[in-house]
Image 1 (cartoon, rainbow, N blue to C red):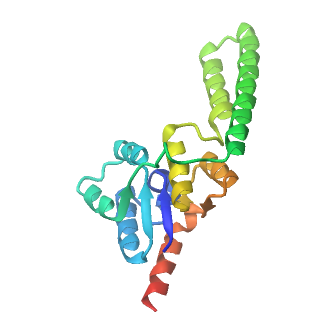
Image 2: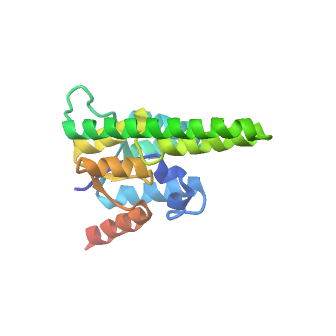
Image 3: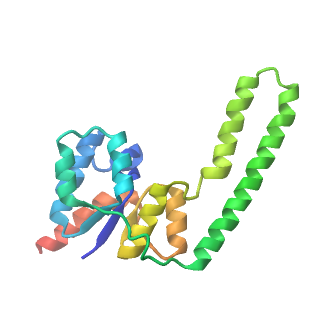
Length: 193
């Protein structure tokens, strides 16, 4: 039986949820129907589920979602991860901090010659965010998804490139989230035979 560990992006990224249905609620309903009939298991860390509940308004659909998706945190105190992962992560953080510092210095130099400080600050924020956060795990929710997928030897389903990159580094199975609906439909077809 295949185990899938879900990130919020499956249901909040329009590019992904629209593979299930045009609107978010319809997409979740379609997912629930497919999941119930697929024969697979689905997990979502508690922190990710809490984040999802803040973002989406699914009303009574939450109960059905919880019937299909097991909400559970990884066993953080009993789980070991490769030291190389931590080493690479620290190196990446150091590189990004230095890159962010260079961006701040560049924008500070421009500030003295700039008449529109507001636009300059917005550009600084965007470049700084890109340098420090894009392509990396940058929240406890991200860490929980990776740890749970690692612990369960599950397939990570996420559109977050940072999650996907770092999950791949420690050998977590990945699928293209755009194919998730087709994969579930395939499970159902093969189950019927």
